[in-house]
Image 1 (tube, rainbow, N blue to C red):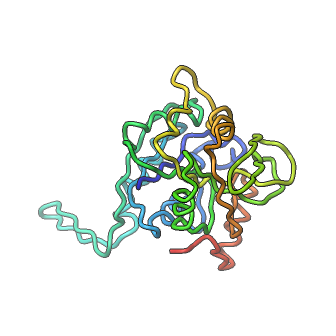
Image 2 (cartoon, helix red, strand yellow):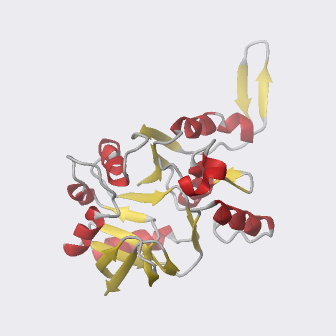
Length: 254
């Protein structure tokens, strides 16, 4: 199963970082947010990733192209130029997909269709951390048999809220300030979800597509009661780094 990660937003609410780097490369404990997300998926056996790039996407490519020599010991034979990495390398297979700097989320996901193929896949945002059990999430998705499953978080927030009955979404409202179950990312999606992504215009996945999935009874909600956070602002980033520095690595399941 592949994991698709939305990495293309401009991160305007974190301009202290995003003037120079895309938000997924903001550092937590010396590693990018994106690295932490990928390590979670890797722990649950997901090693194939499709990164949906946009704003400063070349920086993400550079990070992974330089990853091995920067993070591993190595042997260099200067007479031949041969380089041999020491230790265990990551087993990731990464597709870096340029989806446009101004493309909205549904348009980014639609562009990944040919690389995903006719199989169920996972999707999340490049700025969210959680200690979610992905085995349980996938099992729940399979049990519900819906086109899509979203991870629901109990929260008072500015993010989109869901009403849920019997594990299925009944309504979805994007960015309302109220108590409720919010969209926590960490989706499991069947190929059927592409039928909900309009090809003739660019829209937010969190807008019309999710609302239509709800209307058709095709959006299941997996309730996660453990740790979850969205790193939406520079203040959020400082808070998560403070947790890391204090040894509170609550999202680190690997």
